[in-house]
Length: 123
Image 1 (cartoon, rainbow, N blue to C red):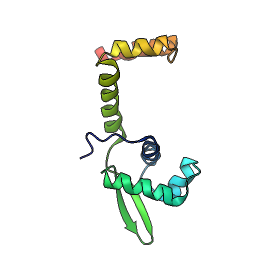
Image 2 (cartoon, helix red, strand yellow):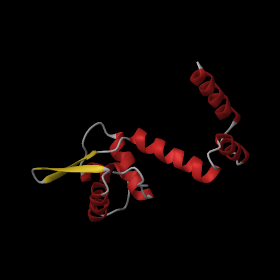
Image 3 (cartoon, one colour):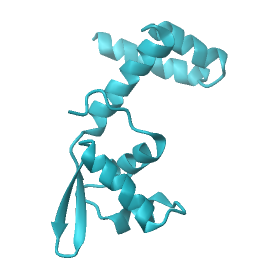
């Protein structure tokens, strides 16, 4: 259902806040956690869109709407990462790492950590 749906930045921030919680969330909880200058109606519009797009489930509990994720963070991040790698670097992990290193977005210690990860993945 949400396989090819990419989240706009604001909706992604909301989903990150939802995923960070250990259980259902309310709009009040999210307003507090997000530290945005949004009005409640703005957040409710985003939440409604996320429900319509299949990212969240909304359940009415008394007078309060409670939201739970329908998409796991790991699944979304994995899909977006693969899409980015394919679109921007034609699927080349080496090109991605090289561009990050040349742009000084990663350090030598980051590369050492990556080497450790690769060694561990091979074992």
